[in-house]
Image (cartoon, rainbow, N blue to C red; front, side, top):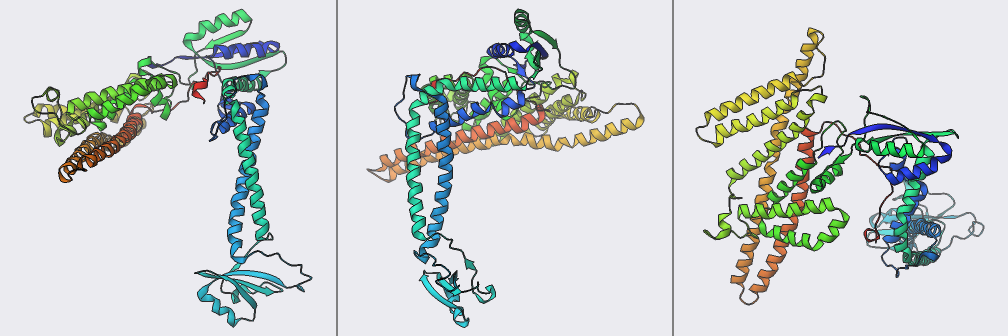
Length: 601
């Protein structure tokens, strides 16, 4: 649950052993090579990127051949080259086909014709116009030689015969270009393009027989491409080579042992103040899903804190509050159990996150007493566990705002822990006091009767928090009395954040609103199904089942979408805005990839 300490390393060795040493370091897989970082992230080598492009092109083919398991006849370079050639040629032909289809559509009203040589027409040319029917009569007022060759319900297709283009001012519509190809030639070319596209399609299908072998070798292709990129980007004068890299501090001894064994020179130092190392997050397996959520949106700066655990817990709680139904939680749990094995293979962290979401949804659904929109009978066992009423506006607003205040206090507490490394000192503490004080003030003045002491304590907290924000929101040094005035000006600007923090806290009311909407929709579909059963004898049962299935399915889908979108939004916007001041970049280890065939086909 922390950002791993990183050290800077410089490695120096003999150029003749560069290839072997780099291959061994790639096997170790814990160095973030500085000089090659940009290149390797943007492009893992031309051959590696071409291989990945070719593989995905074949993988996305609609029809696939039976897979070949024997790789003796597999020529990887030929398959890559042929697949990309098919892809490029297909793109060109599809663009030409679209153009020809449009030309065909434009030429069909004019009919099939070829332009005669100018010698035969004595210099006269054909000029084409598409004229609205109500304007065709104006041509009678001109001296042009013209003929209407086709009409539809809107336009007349006019051909004018003249040596030079008619004056546009005398024509009721602008000139139309038909091109030099006749309709028959366009259709003939269309047939040729369609035939070639069909041949290319079947060639593509034929190459899909190698997908299984291709997937097995894809990782090695990417690894080799990455190794070549790193090799080419390092300093090498023919005698020596060297490069710089970032290294997790816990792996220093291991790297020292390796460099002594193979005869490399190693220099290790902590990062300088003006350097920004990459960020490597390390969490327990139980919280790794939160790490994935954090990295999906941003990467904390190296000198910040790791919010993975907070994001994990808050997202799970938000999702459960928005679903607000134990029955829906059981359905999601069934989905999780069915797909648990596959999810565990692809991403164990996300699998655990989904499991936590399911458990939280069931628990919260029991607490609000909702089972597919049906409330438990009074004095029943489920009714004993009902602690909240989702339709109680005052209760749910209090809960939502309390969660919002706690969430933002947690965000600022992370920055407070870094105060010793920050020049802003007690500003996060000020916002924490302001949030807690404002909440206590609201409780004592509005929610709880005869709680004047709580309200006054909240007022004191808001005042103390505002004072901390005013005095500790500036990094200006105090060398002159003018600096004090400037610091106070900076503090006054920071105090405008009170309106923002107020709006951010109110943003958590969406938890109550969305949870209420989900619960009300479930009840509505139940009522509709009940009315159908009583109002339509015979087919009422079938209608009720259809309403329940479609209605609850739609409601569950909407609730899950809302839970994911708004659960992430409250974390990514409100929480990160107050908890993460700086953005960093991820630690990208120079290592070999591990791609399983099961994950590629």
